[in-house]
Length: 85
Image (cartoon, rainbow, N blue to C red; front, side, top):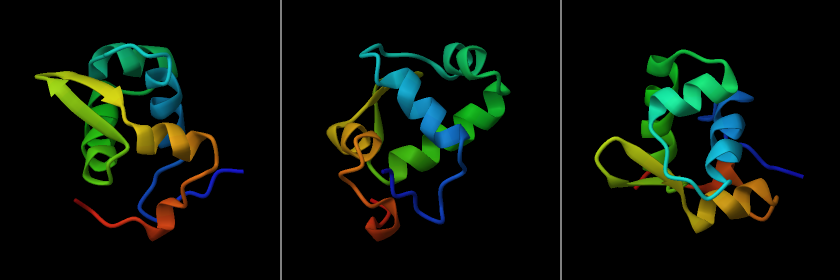
């Protein structure tokens, strides 16, 4: 069972992580298209997810899930206990 933090906006944040969990590096526009959200909303959420170590931006404009993000999806990380980087 996943343990979201109060800072998270679900189901949006979880859908973003699930799309990135495919192993692809994707930009906000592609993610937004796949989860039926506006690109601006996805961009804002990606920045927040990055602050907590769930995603990283290895290349300008492209994001990928981190080990912490994968562990959250598996229910192994309690997001309410994480602090911003």
